[in-house]
Length: 557
Image (cartoon, rainbow, N blue to C red; front, top):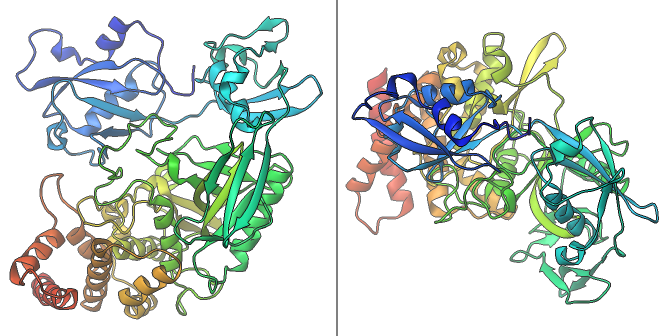
């Protein structure tokens, strides 16, 4: 079975397998025919009721022979169908629409390419890929143009491999070694021009150099030594914590020892585990911006965003790495602002923006310290977690208006005799609007408990204006919409906590009950906008929001 988890049934059987039995006869008036898109396979027809829940559709896909996936993510129109209890018509699904299924790439194969002179290239390849894809990987690694590899022969044993052959067919017994004659690899050079680092890839034939400007609007590389991973800093006064610099150093050591990044089986974008010097342990997680969901090089088969909006409303494709770093920077230690190497109140792992040069191409993305864990909340449920651990996640999510908090991105770690929760995946925090705010913990019993004295003191110390200035100091000047969301969400958290409201009470104000019903915070902002003149300053607008919010919260007591 390929890693994509797709059955090899005939098109007719595919269609029948995804049609509920009640629809074989006369079709109800509210039935619609949609098409399921899975990477590397033809579209699969699927008839559903427009009154059917998202959970029901996912269950039928899960039961479909060959889809051995329980952690499904469905995407339509550039946005994820996150609310399982909502009906498909709430998301606007109609006849002929294509829904993308993001599946777990659980079946990776280790492939070694050995040249005639004994040089070896090692790859982790999804078994659903073909030999042609492998040639592309070789071209990227060596700097050769893919056209120059067309006439090269890949040989496994005595058999010459064809481009269309699947990795799963040639690696049935596990890891394999494939022999190939290739030309001299490309040379990589770096130089500094006017305080900017330019990376140049030169092919042996010098068929035209590829220049990649890594300055990114005055962003400078912290280390100009030509290392495979370098920190990006926009401000020379930024001092990186020892945890960050140690993570970078260990990641570089792993790459220089030949341990290539390994793509994660999870997620809807490109997520790579970076190895340590021995190659036996994960040290960090790298997420390139060009492989984010809906981005140009997304490896999960998601369509390209047509308007630049990300998978969650109010976010932009390519900004996920900035949001990952922002979540770490704004997760202040309990004793003050993140200006030193203290652990944040909510425990977001150390995260930095980096430039990575591997396999012949430059990648910009977030690098986050890998956390050893026993799984996620999705694997074991919330009953064993302490109130303190759950509420530290709640404080972070409310404050950052997280649009993608689910049980799968809360790691469970063993800390002595109790379980510790670690929040990850913050690429959809700080959106420009509250429309897609979702908090898995909202329905856990711990969210209905009052905040502790320690947590109340931490919440009281928060200052959204200082947070906005801190992000600007580190290189991200929030858009006016994102800044407003941070101001309003922080205001709500502080005012709600001061009145003795629980995380559930406050979170319910931020989250929609259904897809099409506005949340209370959205209604509040609309009321504030209707109450002020168009040219009103942001300060005056926030004062109006504060007054309306006071009235709303007082009515809840």
